[in-house]
Length: 147
Image 1 (cartoon, one colour):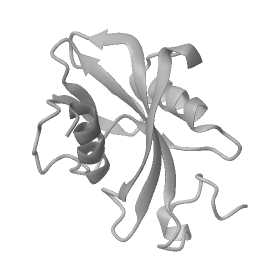
Image 2: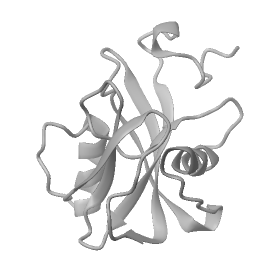
Image 3: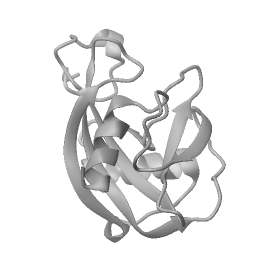
Protein backbone atom coordinates (compact mmCIF):
# COMPACT_ATOMS: atom_id res chain seq x y z
CA UNK A 1 0.00 0.00 0.00
CA UNK A 2 1.18 3.51 -0.76
CA UNK A 3 2.59 5.17 2.38
CA UNK A 4 0.48 8.24 1.63
CA UNK A 5 -2.74 6.22 1.72
CA UNK A 6 -5.12 7.45 4.38
CA UNK A 7 -6.19 4.02 5.58
CA UNK A 8 -2.90 3.66 7.42
CA UNK A 9 -2.96 4.25 11.14
CA UNK A 10 -0.69 7.04 12.41
CA UNK A 11 1.48 4.37 14.07
CA UNK A 12 2.18 2.97 10.57
CA UNK A 13 3.27 6.34 9.19
CA UNK A 14 6.53 8.18 9.59
CA UNK A 15 6.02 11.30 11.76
CA UNK A 16 7.04 13.46 8.79
CA UNK A 17 4.10 12.20 6.74
CA UNK A 18 0.91 14.19 7.26
CA UNK A 19 -2.41 12.49 7.89
CA UNK A 20 -4.60 13.32 4.88
CA UNK A 21 -8.12 14.33 5.90
CA UNK A 22 -11.13 16.30 4.70
CA UNK A 23 -13.58 18.23 6.87
CA UNK A 24 -16.80 20.21 6.55
CA UNK A 25 -17.87 23.44 8.23
CA UNK A 26 -21.53 23.27 9.23
CA UNK A 27 -23.16 26.24 10.95
CA UNK A 28 -26.13 26.59 13.24
CA UNK A 29 -28.60 29.50 13.10
CA UNK A 30 -26.25 31.59 15.31
CA UNK A 31 -23.30 31.09 12.92
CA UNK A 32 -21.57 28.81 15.39
CA UNK A 33 -19.61 25.91 13.92
CA UNK A 34 -20.45 22.27 14.54
CA UNK A 35 -17.56 20.42 16.11
CA UNK A 36 -17.32 16.75 17.07
CA UNK A 37 -15.32 14.69 19.53
CA UNK A 38 -14.25 11.12 18.90
CA UNK A 39 -14.72 8.45 21.55
CA UNK A 40 -11.69 8.26 23.84
CA UNK A 41 -10.40 11.74 22.93
CA UNK A 42 -10.80 15.20 24.41
CA UNK A 43 -10.39 17.53 21.40
CA UNK A 44 -13.31 18.85 19.39
CA UNK A 45 -12.72 19.04 15.65
CA UNK A 46 -14.58 19.71 12.44
CA UNK A 47 -16.60 16.72 11.25
CA UNK A 48 -14.75 14.73 8.61
CA UNK A 49 -12.02 12.16 8.40
CA UNK A 50 -9.30 10.38 6.51
CA UNK A 51 -9.25 9.96 2.76
CA UNK A 52 -9.56 6.44 1.37
CA UNK A 53 -7.08 5.40 -1.37
CA UNK A 54 -8.05 7.07 -4.65
CA UNK A 55 -10.73 9.21 -3.01
CA UNK A 56 -10.90 12.94 -3.64
CA UNK A 57 -11.03 15.26 -0.63
CA UNK A 58 -14.55 16.37 -1.56
CA UNK A 59 -15.77 12.76 -1.82
CA UNK A 60 -14.14 11.93 1.52
CA UNK A 61 -15.79 14.91 3.20
CA UNK A 62 -19.22 13.92 1.88
CA UNK A 63 -18.72 10.25 2.86
CA UNK A 64 -17.53 11.11 6.37
CA UNK A 65 -20.49 13.45 6.99
CA UNK A 66 -22.84 10.68 5.89
CA UNK A 67 -21.18 8.10 8.16
CA UNK A 68 -20.74 10.27 11.24
CA UNK A 69 -23.82 12.51 11.14
CA UNK A 70 -26.17 10.78 8.68
CA UNK A 71 -26.43 13.91 6.52
CA UNK A 72 -26.48 13.18 2.81
CA UNK A 73 -24.68 16.03 1.08
CA UNK A 74 -24.15 16.25 -2.66
CA UNK A 75 -21.07 17.64 -4.42
CA UNK A 76 -22.86 20.88 -5.29
CA UNK A 77 -23.75 21.34 -1.59
CA UNK A 78 -20.15 21.70 -0.40
CA UNK A 79 -17.85 24.57 -1.37
CA UNK A 80 -14.08 24.42 -1.01
CA UNK A 81 -12.92 26.74 1.77
CA UNK A 82 -9.21 26.03 1.83
CA UNK A 83 -6.26 23.73 2.39
CA UNK A 84 -4.85 23.68 5.93
CA UNK A 85 -2.01 21.98 7.79
CA UNK A 86 -1.94 21.79 11.58
CA UNK A 87 -0.69 19.58 14.40
CA UNK A 88 -2.89 16.49 14.77
CA UNK A 89 -5.11 16.78 17.84
CA UNK A 90 -5.05 13.10 18.78
CA UNK A 91 -1.77 11.83 17.33
CA UNK A 92 1.18 13.56 19.04
CA UNK A 93 4.05 14.32 16.68
CA UNK A 94 1.88 14.17 13.56
CA UNK A 95 0.34 16.82 11.34
CA UNK A 96 -2.93 16.78 9.42
CA UNK A 97 -3.15 17.90 5.79
CA UNK A 98 -6.78 18.91 5.42
CA UNK A 99 -9.05 20.12 2.64
CA UNK A 100 -11.88 22.03 4.31
CA UNK A 101 -15.29 22.53 2.74
CA UNK A 102 -18.34 24.54 3.80
CA UNK A 103 -21.82 23.04 3.69
CA UNK A 104 -24.00 25.23 1.47
CA UNK A 105 -27.66 25.72 2.38
CA UNK A 106 -27.39 23.55 5.49
CA UNK A 107 -28.01 25.35 8.77
CA UNK A 108 -28.73 23.33 11.88
CA UNK A 109 -31.19 24.33 14.57
CA UNK A 110 -30.16 21.65 17.06
CA UNK A 111 -27.05 19.68 17.91
CA UNK A 112 -27.21 16.55 15.75
CA UNK A 113 -26.96 12.97 16.92
CA UNK A 114 -23.55 11.41 16.24
CA UNK A 115 -22.66 7.97 14.89
CA UNK A 116 -19.65 5.76 14.14
CA UNK A 117 -16.63 6.65 16.28
CA UNK A 118 -18.02 9.96 17.51
CA UNK A 119 -18.94 10.49 21.16
CA UNK A 120 -20.31 14.01 21.11
CA UNK A 121 -21.13 17.09 19.05
CA UNK A 122 -21.20 20.74 20.12
CA UNK A 123 -21.31 24.19 18.55
CA UNK A 124 -18.51 26.71 19.06
CA UNK A 125 -18.53 30.41 18.15
CA UNK A 126 -15.96 31.56 15.60
CA UNK A 127 -14.16 33.60 18.26
CA UNK A 128 -13.89 30.64 20.65
CA UNK A 129 -10.62 30.29 22.54
CA UNK A 130 -11.66 26.99 24.09
CA UNK A 131 -8.71 24.71 24.83
CA UNK A 132 -11.01 21.85 23.80
CA UNK A 133 -10.74 22.86 20.11
CA UNK A 134 -8.25 21.03 17.89
CA UNK A 135 -5.46 23.16 16.37
CA UNK A 136 -6.94 22.74 12.87
CA UNK A 137 -10.33 23.98 14.06
CA UNK A 138 -8.75 27.08 15.59
CA UNK A 139 -7.00 27.84 12.28
CA UNK A 140 -10.20 27.36 10.26
CA UNK A 141 -12.23 29.45 12.73
CA UNK A 142 -9.74 32.31 12.34
CA UNK A 143 -10.17 32.26 8.55
CA UNK A 144 -13.96 32.11 8.85
CA UNK A 145 -13.94 35.02 11.30
CA UNK A 146 -11.68 37.04 9.00
CA UNK A 147 -8.91 37.36 11.58
